[in-house]
Image (cartoon, rainbow, N blue to C red; front, side, top):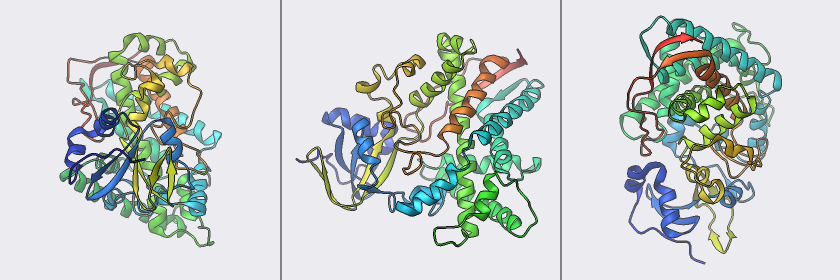
Length: 414
């Protein structure tokens, strides 16, 4: 059976114009969860929906090697990081990350996050207004470094926050934003390489349960210690995603403002509803548009042929807004998660499948917990006004953020 095909010599311009809606628009147009197109000079298969996600995370059918463009590795992921690995090497490296996600360490992260919000609130009360997105990024940078065991001096907070943020901001960008991300990546790798060397030389002595210690002393499957460069790349793969939580926190502030009925339930102190609220933010607001993998070997699925080496993109945004699964996906409704059965393939804001052997983000649990703490502060620990401003999100900009970056004023403790 022929896969529906989008005409055109190259449709990259359409992708840039439509952003997050590019794949969902064509899934609707073709009445199909699979279609072919041509992007950046190569033929690509695009898929979406729960069944497609289950296919995409079948490690027998797909591999990550060669899927992430060099420009993404040079800004967001770093070269040859865990996201680009397959098979036994990936399983071994993923275990390194999962080993950091223990119950005790997550509790430590919760305590660190609470402390940083308390510290920041005291500071904000002395100001007329703040831009929440900027402040949340600084909070998350301090949280990330503290939790990971990475030394961070007060006079370098601005630079490190800006660089980690620039890497995130570069992933869907062309031109200046992309180059800014590459410069930030190079500078951050130099910083972290120096710290790794200080640990290995005995100048620094991080706690053994920290990411800094784990990355500095990790050994590959061949028994050799990771190179300094590789240790730096993987340590940044701890720091950068925590800083990225600032975007979700900012979306949460918008949700509290725009959906007062849901926010009222959040203020009740119900921990289960707090979980629903956080999950709905991660479903409703755009973050990752799609993920890529390459076909490992020829196979057929639902009568469609997948050729070895073909690049396949999984529609993350469209799957999280699939009307067949979510019903009224454009409505913000946290209570929908009361009925969610926990499928690893229909709700995939940070990837799908299995945490340990697959490519689902190892930090998903800590994302949820950090968000719960942060939104509790915004909803229950702080009083503030949100003046009239432009809170619109562009589904063309990758990644998106409210145009005003969310300005709040008259901040006090509740």
